[in-house]
Image 1 (tube, rainbow, N blue to C red):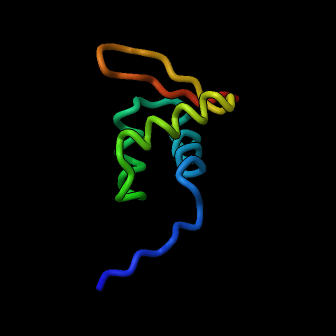
Image 2 (image 1 turned 60 degrees about the vertical axis):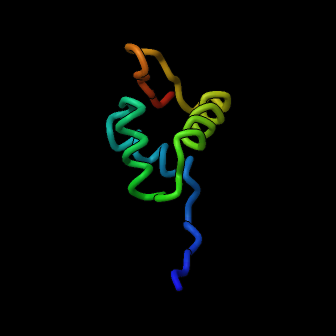
Length: 76
């Protein structure tokens, strides 16, 4: 039987930490891969919801780069 443990920090906090370590900007695919390593059960829909909540809260800014690519920036 596999036991799952609760994460000590929420995914949005980890996302902000990763952005801070990468000089405040990265593509959505790279950020999703970093979150996927830490949170195995995180889906792309959940990732987009996290991005939306952080953008509405004024913590990040997303801009469209090319077809299907976005740039995620940490707002200082």
